Image (cartoon, rainbow, N blue to C red):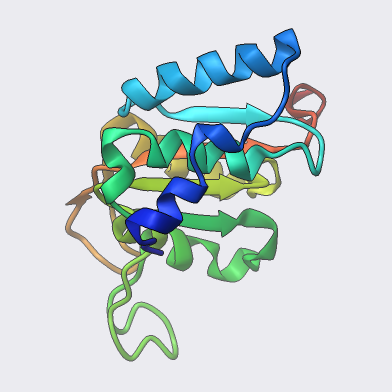
Length: 166
């Protein structure tokens, strides 16, 4: 979703409050990530610690700040719709697909795709997600043509990923 320049400023790094070393370290990291606008980011932290705020500060302070910022909560996407929602689909790809649909990756092209609660993404979807990160293209469900996407992915989770791997 696009925000006006004034709304984007509301999501700047200045929204981070605190003087502790930990907060100052986060501010320093965010500023570096704003400059490295092709670097994908994983934000780890407990619920309510401001992962969304960090993601928005990274996006709106970067050269991508004028592009789209698409925020997706991975927990709210049903497994049977996840591939279509993320990568899009072509007309006729499945029953009820009466028109082609751009997925979140294509919608975010030129900007940032924020995947909140990415730790809840199904294992079957992880391989396709990795391919987009590695190769920079998507193939919509039911399609045969690859589409290049210029997307920075900022992902966040409160899940213990090491425990899930084990």
